[in-house]
Image 1: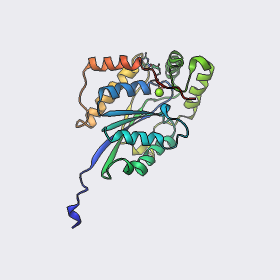
Image 2: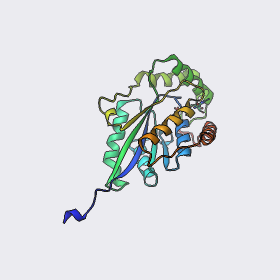
Image 3: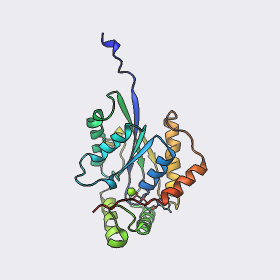
Image 4: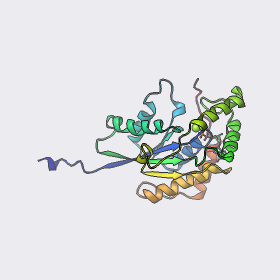
Length: 229
Ligand code: GDP
Ligand code: MG
């Protein structure tokens, strides 16, 4: 009697995937969100040592054992990187989570126009101001020109989100963000909270302005613990 074995109870987990370039505030926004959403974890590619392989996906799956959501904090500026996330989740999830788990993939789309001079000026200023306060990019020690060349590399290779084709057609929700204000990470975090509440009210509750402001200030003060060579 196969019908006695019920696999119909699906467990949903939420995977939040950044698509961005350097200095868009991915890490700052991720910290704000993980502070405000207790069920939301945060895994950072910048904390991973080589060989990288599938470590980021494995960390995300490990996090989802005791969280409903996870933010994958990597630029994912290439279609290949987005495809890698979908493929690895499919291939590896059963090692970590029950077989009846399904995923909702949410894209945080930070870049509407990679050629925008405002985007360049704002992210460049932020990377300079961040200085050495990053795991791998030491803008102060290595110099501005070097940091600029890394930034330009990401911008030149950047492949925009294209919902009509794979892999981006696999996203369940795409949230368009922008990086054009001095408080962009706060307004972007609020946009994400509102969108998640709209699409998935059963997993996300509204958050007060005071809590958002406090999380934003704490996130701006964040210093990574490690340096990776
Ligand atoms: P990422 O490279 O996309 O992860 O960018 P980060 O989150 O590391 O942000 C780059 C730098 O800009 C860091 O020093 C942040 O503290 C700072 N930053 C991020 N968001 C904001 C913001 O909304 N306002 C201001 N003033 N600084 C920000
Ligand atoms: Mg970062």
